[in-house]
Length: 472
Image (cartoon, rainbow, N blue to C red; front, side, top):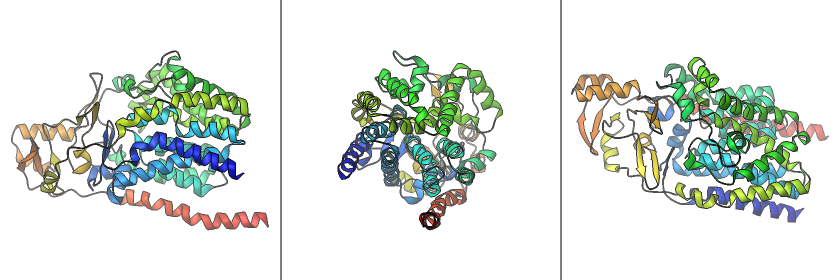
């Protein structure tokens, strides 16, 4: 037994290191959708306010309160390690555990989302199997995992769906509280204007070599950005098929959850008009315009099923998963810390006021690619939010940004003051100032979210007492 535990401990550590190693390095992170800074601002946008929809709440507010990049590191390593531990606990044999752990930690979904800079979505993907494993017997574990998964709206939504299928009803209902930091601001700050059909087309799942789009989704890949894709799709499909063939060995609720995820992703790929209609008519449906994210709901089934397999198919799945993993550590080098280009003197001069950068793009160039503007995490600013994919504008600039730009061009300082703009920054220096007051920070919902783990910790003694009385 000790030898088995040691083997799985070493294997789990290798998997976590292979995927998370860039986050063990000192410094700040800037790559595509990721901007993890040491000293993020306590700005309205970090807490779901600002000029754009609350897509990064409560994540940005939490990081601003507890200390930025180091807190993200803790969450990333803790989530990956929890996923590995869950897979090992779920498995029925050592060989099956090795296979399940490989898929839990280093699956295509996680790797591609990390390469896109969506680190908190990777955290959610790691934690969905933990929620499902905890199920009806370990509600406090499920609640803690739901909390970690709910850093961003998509993770929170899928955590609630996972809990609704696999946990007690009160756990799933309680998960709704975790979604309040973005759900309530969304009622007052609707989605950015744009062409829903163009957005759905731009973020549609991408076909992969030898397996097509359906195969890409089946292996939990197919991200819309080809530059974030990983190779060896055939191996991923082999892993998926082996996992699905063993689905009868695990609780049916996991198959139901996987059917929701894979079925939804394939349906929206085949019938994109249904997704366009949903985005135009259903509040919050824009979260699914990147419909490939739905496939993460299949992860609990894949992990549990591989863990329940006999040794031969489990070993075959391990080999296929390992082939996929071989180039991953090298590919993830783009996530390593880099200079963000932040002018600390300028940040001090802005001094908490709302800044408007009329000539600064909302995406900045970094070696090998682009990234979100790090100033959007460092100061309160009027953000454009304009997004183009392959030359197609899928999100227009926010109304506040357009109004501020118009006022600046007309030298209308009174209008800038009305819009809340405190300073205008041009060429890296403050070009104009107004009398606009510093913005109020809507911190209450994020504070409530941060307090939620205390509920899980408070439930531990009660769970222990119930377990003790059952044994006696």
